[in-house]
Length: 341
Image (cartoon, rainbow, N blue to C red; front, side):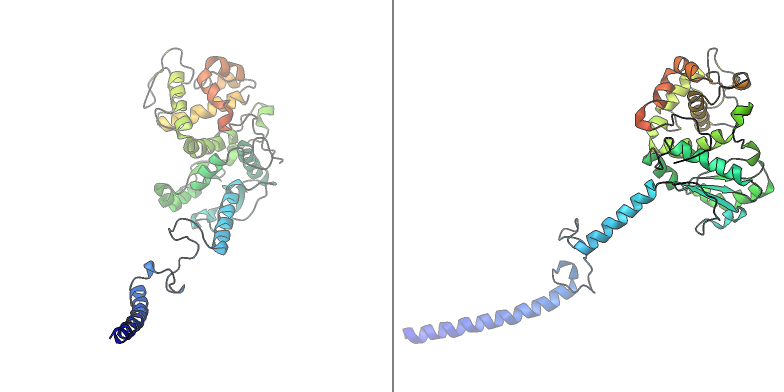
């Protein structure tokens, strides 16, 4: 009896082992096919988990990791690409069709300079040189502040140049890109050919290129790269400094400014953000001695009274401190358009 009982137990155990093997095969086929996300051995052509670990958080495939790393590095390189020099090219293929009105283009760290055919090449290159010097003030071929460059590139920031303001060509251009402007996908600043005066200060003429290009750099670059400091809205550091310079907070341009105000911009079409942009321009160009030539002080006194570095330092210590703070990489030399990295 004992021997027969033992034999029966062995036979039963063998049968159970055999049955379990069959069940395991059937379980693998059915369960993993129905829910491939739970499978660790699912075919690659049905479920692609290449490049991630079991938690989906990190790379576990060397090839995928290398490709992703290279892509990241290429993306970063676009933002900090060095600039060896400036040259006029044809309009890039990726530009919106509305830009076909222009025939000249210069790329400055990803910021476009577009000009119509009537603009002399020396003026186009001068505008591009001023932009390059604002962004790469030490002229080492690299932008001084990558944060500002990223902010400009994010908005596809561009300067466009027609011979004069309010031309029919400019009107049609704006109609063509209105949808991009309204969506916030594009930031533009005009700089008219008649205003571009290379070397103007040496002849007692102001070069408006210094102003128009700086407006784009600040309202699209600095304002977004450092919103708490240079943001063009109430409460930013530069807004607080401006309110002090105007003698108080004014949402709109007042009919008159308080006695003692040194920033008294009076264009009624200029809103609060615009007022900050103009203030930033007046302050920086004065700090860099760009408003200090014969007759200039009297010419601009109805808007701005601190037209020299000394006057700015003594009369507006708040903005002076912001513009000289090395954390924000503001220019320390006035551009002349002769960019030589």
